Every structure is written in C-alpha cells, then in structure tokens.
Length: 135
Picture 1 (cartoon, rainbow, N blue to C red):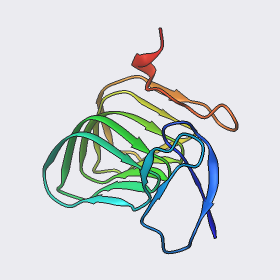
Picture 2: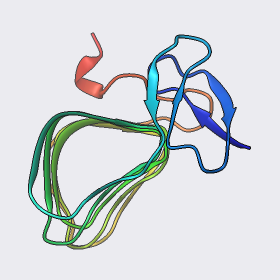
Picture 3: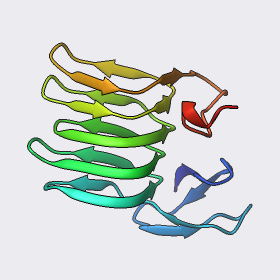
Picture 4: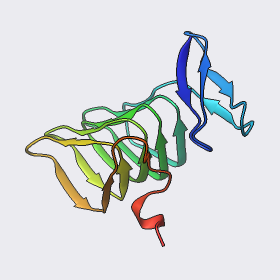
C-alpha cells in the first residue's frame, strides 16, 4: 500500500502499489494517480494528478490550472497557475509563467520566471489554491 492525498479535499488514504486511479473515500472524487509527463507542446485546460507533473526539455505545457500532488519538475516551458503538494523544481533550462503554491521550490541558476506569485508553505499548511486565488 502507498499513501496518496486527494487533490480536491486533501484527505490522505492508502491505495495499492500499482493503482493508476482511485476514488477518494472522503469526497468521492475520481483521482488520477499517475505521473503526467509532457514531451511536446500541450495546451490543456486543467491538469490534476496525485502524481508528479514533468515538463521535459523542449516541451511546453500551457494549462489554466495545474494540480500536482507529488510535485512538479520543469525542464521546458510551463504556463499555468499551479497548486502542488510536493516539491517544485525549475531546472536551468526552465521557463515559468504563472502563480504557484507549493511546500518547497528549487530554482536552478538559469531558470527564467516570466511572471507569477509564489506561495511557499511547508508542513501541514499545504496549499489549496494558487496565490492569485487568495482574497
């Protein structure tokens, strides 16, 4: 068994080690447990996963909303308002545009942040909305 956290209600529960999807026992939301790997240009309205979102080198992701339970790694270009419950890593080749709420972020020298607000909140204060969503 492995732990996952629902990206809708933040309830933590256990799933089988090879499960790709699950239904949250607390809110009944259908959840994607897989990593989302972007290897070429992609325009998506909403990306939601309990896994990681990986934007490969020379790839780009344009999403209105990005929710990643396991973390985000960008080696290409990402334009999104993101909520992440794992670490965010922007490599030296990364280009980021958008708001981001996460427990931690690593920005390698050379990474470019074009615009956006970042909210870093470690521990139990896991982000639930992108910084622009705060009233």
